[in-house]
Image (cartoon, rainbow, N blue to C red):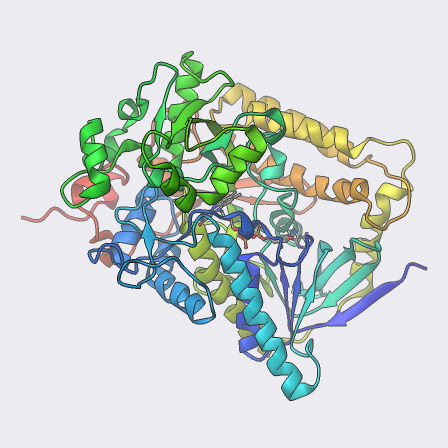
Length: 625
Ligand code: FAD
């Protein structure tokens, strides 16, 4: 009989990145007994890698900034497909969340006047990213962990036990959400990576904060953790995912050497003055300013350069267009034969800033290129190209509480959908984690106050049988081979530019991969067995990839992180629709769902002429006489 540990909590948070930590802090502050679970080491979540900063309209660098401007930028970046209520809450609450972080001990870079410094980033009208050099995510995580330790010290003082109210389970992977006979969430099932021992967390409320899906793609800035677990756990529990077709390809990943292909080159390089050039030395981004952004971007190099010193009287350079635009432009230059020797383009900061400025502002980038590519970015340009970076699609949630469609399930951070529409602006993720992590923690705590649950034995047995299945099969598929094929399929057929025929091929290939996942086998003990871990992760990656491919085939337009070669235009009719995926039996069902029309006062924040670029005639506000 396999041993299973059983633990009881009010709120279980799966994921210890920014969203998970902030949710857990909030649930504990509401007095709930809270568990935080992460499959990596505690402190090694993806959030640690965030370099540029957290976007919040504090107005420190430019007093004209406010939540309305941030809201407008976010909606424009997402091409108006954002859940506008989420974008509103985010823009309004981000400054408070950043100040709160400072009060908990975060050491942000300062302006000359001693305020939190804010830097420029693509798509943001004003300098808006609160930052700590290029290591902002690390500071966010450090601060939240410090807050958790201080809460545990309070609990020890009061209750004699550090873990009395908030307990951390590192290197523990959840493989199933558990539901009771009424269809409510009643806990989560997982294994401890070190021993392979199973554990059941019984709780009425579960918050998913598991991050993204990048490991389904071959070239990605994402780390090993990003296997779409939370997306798949939600689907398998009966929740829905929205707009999975929108995958962000960051324009600047390393392209060389092959071993580090995809690793991110932060947008701060461009925010601090770096420019993109092709093999002819031309600053090509001026050729790629789309009509919807023409009014806000400089049309000459001189004006673009003046903007860094005098943003009031000049328009920003097109290197700072939203990520989807820059990624597509780089893709086109490379395809046209004007790429760099290793298939990217050149990103030049060396000729723009003094070496000591580069080392001060971009220490991690300087180190990264020196160590990994033997390139000194203070003296020569970097070679960069698009890399799969972020998924805009995710669990469909209530904007105010983070509640998913299944009672007791909540989601926040990259695993949730809606906030960023079809394309996320840089810096808007870290602030999203704080705003919606807090809200989901609060929502889960309130829900847990009213509900009690019992875990049916049949649920635990089914979860355990599923986790052990790869051991039961003999001579089956190698999980690494299946993973490699999946990554190649997604890269080649569901990548940055998509076509009907290729998407159909991808869906067929994914169907076959799904079957092969069912016959993957492993041998050996269960302690630290990466092959077994991957065998279990594959179910999630293939399921989520099917959602991406099916939604990408369905949406016949190009918008943000979804570019269709065969439907190159953005369509106002398609903007009214979300694509929703559900899965009852491991296969994906897709349906169209109407977007809720934007509230009138929020519509009023835009010029009618601008709205015409995004909305249908019947959605436009009446013309003033
Ligand atoms: P994460 O921080 O990834 O945390 C996910 C957690 O879930 C981890 O603890 C993981 O172990 C756990 N987990 C996953 N699956 C399971 C499971 N099955 N069981 C248990 N635990 C599980 N955004 C910005 O706003 N500004 C930036 O400057 C910026 N820079 C970035 C730089 C890089 C290189 C990258 C890759 C991203 C960057 N982003 C940035 C995006 C941002 O970092 C992420 O979107 C964000 O950190 C996601 O946070 P999260 O809390 O949702 O998830």
